[in-house]
Length: 301
Length: 213
Image (cartoon, rainbow over all chains, first blue to last red; front, top):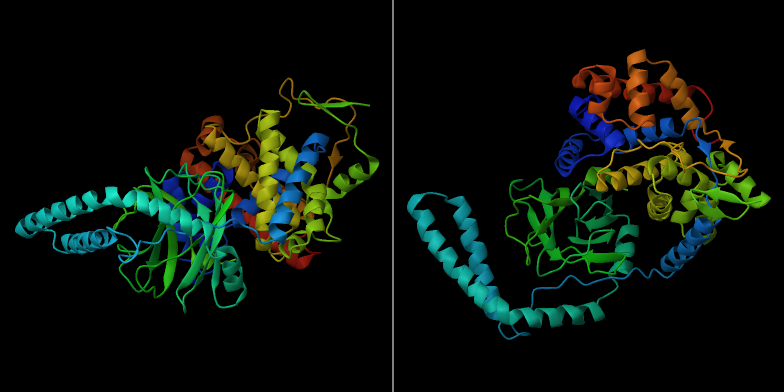
């Protein structure tokens, strides 16, 4: 599209509203979606003008000394962390392998059935087929529920072990970002309560299908109640069915986490990365009711 | 000499620090953000010296509670350091980059609290700066350009932008206050901001750069 993005009245309205009073999650998502249409899109364009106007003639007060001291301590901590590239990383808990864990095979089998049935269910959503598939779905769900209980404790053990021996994803992310081939894209948070203070970026190399996500300020989750899930919208696929990029947790007490992207299908041309809040274990098809973060390749850093 | 800020006692400022903060909003003889992105630890502190007053002032204007303003200031600086690699000098000055991050974080914070952004006045009772701290009327070229451009707009556009950006009223509050239909408020604000952007672009191209020079 050749038009300038600010000529899009709705997009301009959203940018102005964000600069003045902020946006709710629906409006943030709409902004992200509309922004994709413009190659020249500049996410900060209106915010910069608002900021420039708001500081014009501003009488600047010096920071209180005690605040400066606290900030200096924070700066030292941050610098040390950066210097050591010591961003704490938390492994994305991989699906347990059948050979590794008793019960895993049944879980995988049940999950496979569930995925297949769900896909079919959506493709042929009518009458008798629907009833028959629904019965199969109930059976699959029961199998899944039976095995999940026994698997839960083992998954927790595996996850904890993976945290301990996690490869340095932060370092790998830096290497990938500096390689010149991968895309580095900043996250934009929505108004979802889990994401209001969230920041970070993702790195994605489409050639190797390797990627990592860095988050800070994302609300810690209780994995028994909800989990975060990445979705990759691929221009070469139906946008109603984005590619599942994996489920992950934000542990309490971690200021920053790096999570590897595990796309379940090959990604052709990513046009949007979205983090949703889902029930534990993630979902096959997201209702997209809670979109927490978005990253668009046209907003590369 | 003692200075009391929002009920919190502060130590006197050293002359050196005053000079650093006075330079704050307009110093680009040695830009800091690119150096922070490159891992220069000294630049992290320089950034604090240079923009500390600006961020603190914006936080104080936006937030009623001094404690909240202090928390917000720390939060904003952390975000500035983390985002330093995103700074593009071609798009604007470091000052405006920092102020942009500050505004966003403050708006986020106020929305979380269910309050209207930037509605509190620093002149609320009990929030006066006491003592003899000097208020420095700093200059940022980019901000000056924006202010100059604002003055060239139609009165209705100036009015909605001032109410929205400087007094922090929402679109609907501006409509209530001015009697303009909500759609008109949005249109005037959008057109005003785009006009300012265009005028600033022209000024940057025809005059000395728009950064803090």
